[in-house]
Amino acid sequence: MQQQRPTLPPLEWIRAFEAAARCGSFTAAAAETGITQSAISQRIAQLEQRLGTMLFHRHPRAITLTVEGEAWLPHIQSALDTMRDSSEALFGTGRRQLTISASQSIIDLWLTPRLAALSDIAGGQLAIRTMVLGAHDAVEDEVVRIRYGVGDWPHAYKLPLYSEGIVPLASPELIGRRGGHWSDWPRIACSGPRPGWPDWVACHGGGSTPVPHLRFDTFLSALGAARAGTGVLLGSLPLCDQDLAAGRLVRMGRDHLDHHATYWMIAGQDAVSRTQWAELTRIMT
Image (spheres, rainbow, N blue to C red):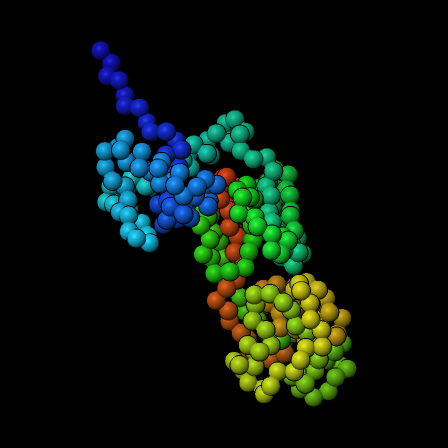
């Protein structure tokens, strides 16, 4: 007589366990999966009851995996990846459109040179969304997002695009028109998370910081003004690489500012397959 195999726990319980283990908290797992923190906690409790063992140690402000949970996690992650990739390969159930959300500056300066390769991995169906400042996009589970920060997002996939380096840049036209040291020339400021002129002076000296003649709310606009010769811009070296190579901008000296933050590409498991993420990693860095 054939022995009956034990039934598996419901998939939603297993997904709750995997998300909580990877994110390190029930709250972060809830944010990623789009359900409440209490639902995550309840599903994991039901899973533990079904398995007959504790998977997490609950602490006042954190959770940690038990020995049993730590041993089970890689098997669960491998199984979920296999299910996701095989269903997409065999039945075409994966998303047919790759959607990337980024600021206009990143779209123009980082994504545009890579569009052909990105379209290839998207199967020719690639959607680019311009990020709106202040818009809440936590519910966009099926969107690959590019955001500036230190990488502390509770997503399944996270990748820094480059190491930030910030330098003063000016156009050849401005250099030819102005005399003296560049620190006496008009300055361009840009709103946003990157360090600005006060940070530059604090790091490299030079007395008080002149009030910028122009201030923009996007890096792309500020970069255009610098190309036009209206002032000196603190520019991101990776984003200005093409302008420097083409001679549209010139680096003012060898000093630079390092910064702990940079642009990250982040995505949930519903946004891309494991294979797509590997291809995105190759193309975007």
